[in-house]
Length: 313
Image 1 (cartoon, one colour):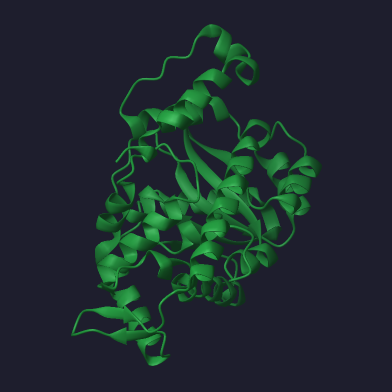
Image 2 (cartoon, helix red, strand yellow):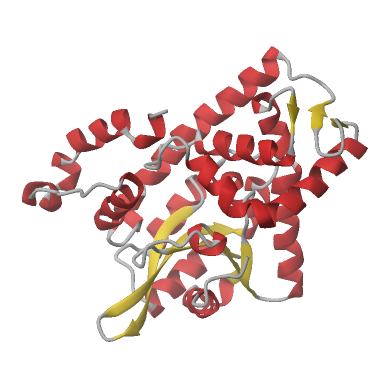
């Protein structure tokens, strides 16, 4: 699955904007997966850095930010990663937008391990991603190890969601469906099927190798040429623990969304476009909602949460 042709140039721009602290840029999301996003859809990146303050100081100096490096660093240390917008000028009046999840290398290692605070990073990095820029060979080794850790530990949290017998495709669908349940999202309830279909060709062989490795480790049992079964049925405690983990993840994901108001340049327009693309419906904000969104947008937000496409079956 080839990356979008604009990805290398935008990745290099993002890496340069964050300065010498940039370790790697990991491309994920619709552009990386070849899902033919709309023309105004932002490119999705994880930007891995050595030091938050150094990275945000460089970003402010090179592209300008409305928030201070100190504030961004404080928020990153309390609830990583920060999600911010970076725009690359491409012609007069036109920009190319990057949505960047900025995370330190130390936090990436933690977020990709079984000790992760929540599912935000794992839910994205278990899918098809591309290391679109990397500082050096040592950084590539470290990043690849983190990505491998994410996939190796999927069985820990997906096991309670698996049917008695399952294929590679069933495993992927269950993992994606469970991952999406850990966030409030604007897409329809069947979005996991869309993601699975878009990535089947590239992720199928990867996860087949992984499931065969689980068999060799005694965690799964082969069931015919293309099927698998769990070697040990999850207990009630296992199911409760995973359910609580995803509830906790949803709380943290919601708090992370609130950081958009402070850190994400053009956050209101971004959210409106996201809802429009996912719900296939025009969103018209009143002048009052646009001028004072933190006061007058709440009724619309609450209504959307209760009626969002993600909840519809």
